[in-house]
Image (cartoon, one colour):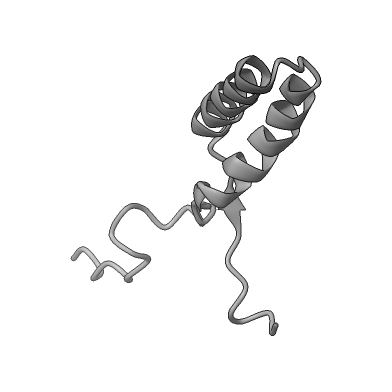
Length: 74
């Protein structure tokens, strides 16, 4: 994968933990083995990364108009 096609993203921790814990508790109760809670916690990280949103580009101080140069004021 080249650097030009790589997109940084920020993990969505709230959704990841919610889905992971729900899956872990569901498996634990259904299979009567509380060890599946650890599986749910591990999957929470995977879900958080998969459901992440694109990272915001850092502000370069040019304002919110996309960095276009302003015309000179006479």
